[in-house]
Structure formats: C-alpha cells, structure tokens
Amino acid sequence: MWKQKRLMSMITILTLYIAISALGADSVSAATSISSVTLTPTSVVGGTSSKGTVVLSSAAPWGGASVSLSSSAPSAASVPRSVTVRYGQKSANFTVTTYSISVSKAVNISGSYGGSTKTATLTVNPTPPTIAIKDFPNYRVFQRDIGGTSKSVTITGTYSNMAWNRVEARVLEHGTNTPVIDWTTIDSTPGGGTFSGNLTVQQGGWYNAEIRALDGAGSVIRSSRGTNKWGVGMIILCIGQSNMSGHGQPPFTIATSDLAVNYSNAGIWEHLSDPYDDGSPWGAVDNDNSTAAGSMMPALANSLLETFDFPIAFVPSGKDNSNLYSQWAYRNPSNHYDTTTLYGQSITKARTAGGVELIIMHQGEADTNAHRTEAQYEADFATLIGNYSDDLYATIPIFICQLGPITLGFNTRTDADVVAVRNAQHDLDNGEDIFMAATAMDQPRLDHVHFTTQGLDAIGGRVAQTIKYYFGATWYYRGPVITSASFVDQTRDMVDVQIDHWGGDDITPSSGITGFSLLSNGSPVSIISADRMATDLIRLTLASPIPNGTTAKLRYLWGSNPDTSALVKDNSSLELPLENTTADITVTEVTQ
Image (tube, rainbow, N blue to C red; front, side, top):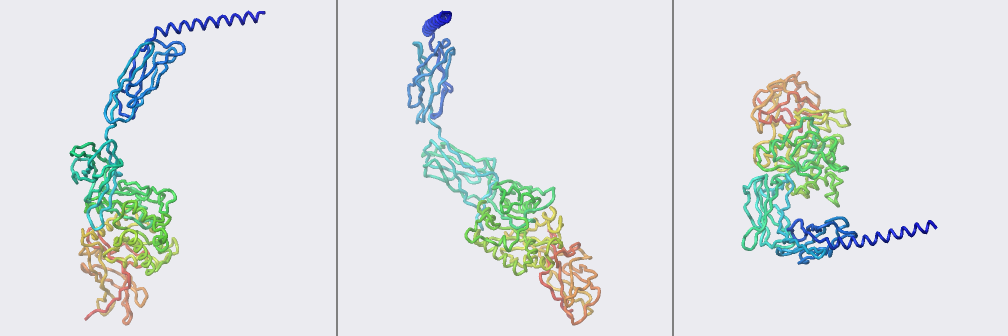
C-alpha cells in the first residue's frame, strides 16, 4: 500500500515540474530577443571563412534558442540555416563560407529570433594576383659553358589570379639593387599558372634573380625576388682515394673566400669547409664519413680565387683504398650512371651538379699494392679518361697528383711497384688535357702514405697553379727537370747533372743534396756529396772512380721512399721539387 502512495507522489511532482517548466519557457521566450550579429573578420578574400557570432538579450531558455540565419548573396557568402544558442548561454558561433569572386561584394549576414533581426556586413574580396619566383638553392653554382664565360640560366615560377602580358626577369648583385642584367622578357605566353624563361648570365657571383609580371599597357602587376645567393662559375669533380678525401689533422685550413663552394655528398650546396667529403648517404659506394678530414681543397680554392673572380665548386667523389684498374676504370656497359660503381657514382654526381669543367685525381696507392706495371697503369688510365670523355665532354682535362713517398712493410708492394705508378703518372702528362698537376715527394706525412694538412695545403697550391696554367693565367706549373749527366773528367769520379728550369731560375740547397743514386753496370755506386755548382748544375762526387768500360746510370728519387731530407727545389714561389727520373739516364763521357 505504501509503495502505491509513494508512486502517486512521484507522478504528481513530475507533472507539476513539467507544467512549471513549460510556463517558464514561454515566459522567457517571450522576453528574449537577438541583441547582435558580429563577424570576425569583416573583410575576407573569397575562398576563406569568417566567424559569425549571434548574441541574445538574455540567457537561452530551456531547450535552447534556435536563431535563423540568412545571407543577402549566398553565391558570395553562405551561412547555415540556423544556429542554436544552448540553454543558459547568451551567444553562439557559426561559420560564414565565402567563394571566389571577380569583384568585391558587400554581403549582409542576418540573424533572427524572438521577433527581432540583426545584421552585420561582410566584404568579400577577389583573390589578389600572386607571382612567385622559384629560388635557387643557396650557394648554387651553375657550370659555365665549356670554353666560355657565361651560362644560360633557366628562371621559373608560378602565378595565380592575373592576366599578364609578359614576365620579365633581371639579375642583381646579391643583397643589393645593383643590376647585373636589366629587365628582360623571358616569357610572353601566359597560361597554366607557371612561367619559364632563360637569361644568359656572365660568370661571377653572388647574384639574386627578380621577376615581374606586366599587363598589356606595361604596368607592373606583381613582382617577386629570390633571396638565396647563386652564381656562374667552375665546378670540379674530385676522384681518387684517401688523399683525395683527405686525412689531414686539425686544425683544418679555412677556405677564406665566400666564392669557395662544396656540392656535398648529401646533395647540398654549401660554403667549402673540411671535412668536405663526409655526409654520404649510408651505403653509398664512395662513403668516407668515418675517415674524411683535412683535405687539399681549401688551399686549392684559396689559390684559385686569388686569380679568378667567380664561384668555384667541388664535387667530392673519392673513396679510401680504391684502385684504378678494377674500380675507377670500370664502367657498367649497360648503365654508365650505375651508382653502385665508383665511376657511375662520380658521373651521376657531376650530372646532378649541372656538369663539371675539369677533374682532379689523387690516386695510385692501391694500384701499387696490386703490382700494376707502368704500362698497365697507363692503359687503365686511358680507359678512365676515355670513359669520362664519352660521358662528360670530349676534351675534359684531368689533373693528376703524383704519388709521394710510401713506406713499405704495410702490405706486399715493392719499390718497383711504387716507381711504376709514379713514373706512369709523370709520363701521362701531355701538357694539353692531362697534367701531372702536383709532385709531392717533399711533403710531410701522417703515416706511411697519408699527408698532413700542411702537406695537403702545398699539394692544393700546386694543383691550383696547374689549373691556372691550363687557363692561361700563368706560364709554368712544373719544377726543374734533369736533362743530362756527364763525367767531369776522365778520372770518372765526379758527375755533373744538368737541369732545365720551368718556373724558377735557381735551386736549393747549395750542398748536402739527397735523392740521387748511381749504378755502374747495374751495381750501386756510393755518392759522398752532391752540391749546387750553378743555377742549373749539380755535381756528384763519388766514393771511388767508376772503371773505364763500364756503363754508369743516374737516377733521382727512385724507390718507394727515397731520402728526401734535402731534395732539390727551385726558387719559384711554390718551391717546386726537381722531378724524379722516369728512366735511367746514361752518364756520358767528358768531351775534350
């Protein structure tokens, strides 16, 4: 019985609550109206949105307040049919969606509730015209035309919402408004949202490019300027093994000119700094990330940029312990650009960089350990340069760094093995497109084969001198050479060595000269002194006369690691060493 009474009480209370709520809602609704409609922002570009807000005069009643919305121009700006202000709240937000239009339009956005209407005005504007140049990577170097001093540079970009008649471009000195090339039409065929055209740019840098779009009356519609520095100059491919990658110790030499550039193993244009040959992707055939250190490149760049006033970029492609005969000289016949080969990787990098003008090679140590003969090394090299001539360009020059001293005992190479490769590198020089660019017999080493940073700096300076010679900027690149040897008199206990100079006109040291050896019928002869007698003459004094009827042969800097403690150098600024003999020189008899 008590349960029935409790149930009846609950029904009575619920009925009373509903009746009171309904009476309250009608009363509140009658008292509440719309206070305002606001828009943020009040002006937009067609295709973007604005936030609308409706505000009531008092809190929304039970069940919320549904505010009707409308637009005076739905094709320009549309709104939802309504927006609900939640119970107990005074405001609610809604989105105004706008559309692209050709001319500006004022659109009234209205909200109605409780018998009242409020309106806000939204201005919808046409999308403004835009144009944007596609900027070049910072430090980008465009390889100048081979044999020329300029490059046709392609300038591209995008545009929208404009009807242009032509696009013009100009080239400016980087960071200034000083024109290098004044406004020139590059595209007069509008359409498709892109533009493209070429400018012939003289070697130099750094530059910025700027473009502008003009209408048929010649008025500028919009313009855009790149901010990254770029230029036109020389790109150099660097191949070989560890002394090309560089094992020099810190502190590394600094490339002082901002025109010295590296096209890194990661494919990034950047200011040249050591270690220049790191950053290879994992697994790359020429990855030297763990060993690359100080190199010849900063000193080489510093020297070149004392003479040339355009950017010079280097493309690292060397690989530790790589040989010529089976690695560098190998080209995949079905895919020359096979990046699993050292050769294919190098020409792929050269092509990606936009072409190269010349090649520097520091290589040969691995071939001595493979016991390649002089003839074999020369044949392997002929294959290599033939491949590069096919795939890069026909007359591409190559600058060879000659093997320096090598200490035996770390592998199976012999004196004869080292001499064979060193002589081949010497004799390959034709003075036209193959150069023995640097001798290194006088340079300090870190270990049995790798040069110090100081030594690499000297080698880099010598390579730079040879490159300058190739371009006609200097008249010499090699040191003195031995031309003949003869006995001083009939006693045959002294030998005069005649030399010819290239860049210098005198020699050092004056006495205690090292590096000479003499054979009598193939047997070594003891030399007790070697002294400078004149600017072009060195006299060797023998421990004992060479018997009449025997043949005497002269050698200089023969062997893997000859005594170079007091080798002969000229008095040129580079202090170039007297070159090694590549064949035994017969000592002639004295002329009476």
